Amino acid sequence: MTDDTHDPRGLIAQSFQIPDITLQDCRTIFLDWAVSLPHDDMAPSAAVLAERHGADHPDHPMITVLNEAQIPIHRKRRRRK
Image (tube, rainbow, N blue to C red; front, side):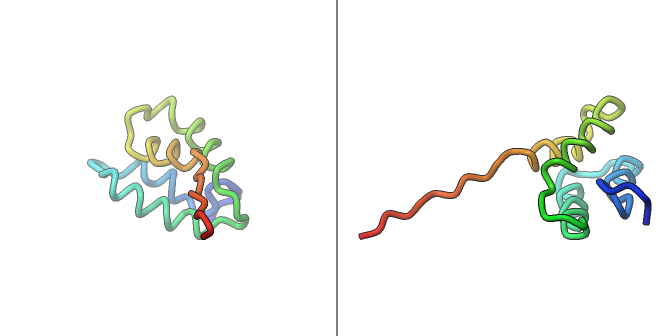
């Protein structure tokens, strides 16, 4: 555990230390990270972490995952008959 409110277990930071990590590995780590957050809205934390790590690791697959996490999800509305 760390004092970092955006990455309390250090999972995202650790992902940048894993050699040859894949996009799928990063998505798995991200999911574990997301469920461990002390709050419900992960997008602001994902933005902070993408900015924090992006300069040193611009092509890392975790940056891709963190950027995807900031995109709002719009649900299709069903038509009522």
